[in-house]
Length: 225
Length: 225
Image (cartoon, rainbow over all chains, first blue to last red; front, side, top):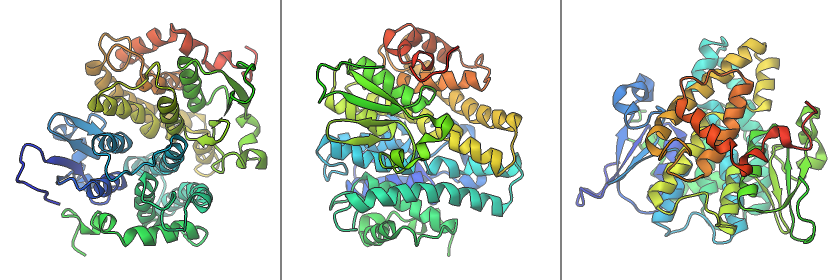
């Protein structure tokens, strides 16, 4: 999305990719915080993340990277905490310490225990080095998503106020991490019927403009449908 | 470690395992914050994390879990941020927003891009489902540690003040995440010569009591050497 260009020195750039769930998270956050930003597509499907131009922005060769006036920031949880500290309104973390820890626990259940295992570079390695075909890859992804969603479902069942959002009765970083993972789960044909709370949260979040505008299908670099 | 029992209602319990690098991180943090705690061993080598008794503490079946007077907290980055908010002194995050983001970026480079890929449950799956032997497992671990360390090395080279600590001239969560990963790298025979800054940081941190007391070999549940 091309953001507000009236303040050229202040506009942030998000180096990302339409289908990357870590980029998707940051798009949702920037929408909630009402922060205009320019989207710089890093075409993972053409290996642009490995080129020198991008490695000079992030030596890890991973997206997203948030480019501000005075910094290049990588790693989506670090970017999320940065935005939360710089732009606390509206809050995406609750006020109490224990409540914040519970939201971050749910966030990292997705971000540490599910997502890294189905990153593109990992799936490529499984194909090329461990000779896995599409069926093996799908089984692998379903295994980690299924295990992680089972835990998330149990947490959300007790922590969600009414099945609308993952924690309490407001959107938090727990939802911001969950929704892109649900998108991925559908891509990899995970059966979501054992996770009714997650499905309910997904429906409620998708109804919000901040989430729907961030959807991969709405991005400039998405292929035409 | 059996902590200070003079305040029985206040002592925290850390459910962990001597060799788990996520548990190792939290031990380091508790040492820095001078927070007495009781260590509850969850014997991963005997599958204790899958038993109902532990699943009731953490549905994800993963360690560490910090048990406080009024909460059970899982996911090491969530626990780290919780302790930092509750017990800010001595700080393990710098004061400035960008500096904090840079420390968290380094922390999550280890926590998201390296560690989840060599978790026990993942290695078990690679053995049983993708028929990998010790050599395949070692190659897999070395691949992700090597890629992640290459990026961390480049970040630390410019951000470390003098090669003592990963960021600036003080211990931060970047070191807390790095050091247990270096321990793992040695377990999996990763050649560390391409990473002189990381090796230097490891040497300096290991010289501090807060790190050395947290070392896996010093824990009650470690096997006798």
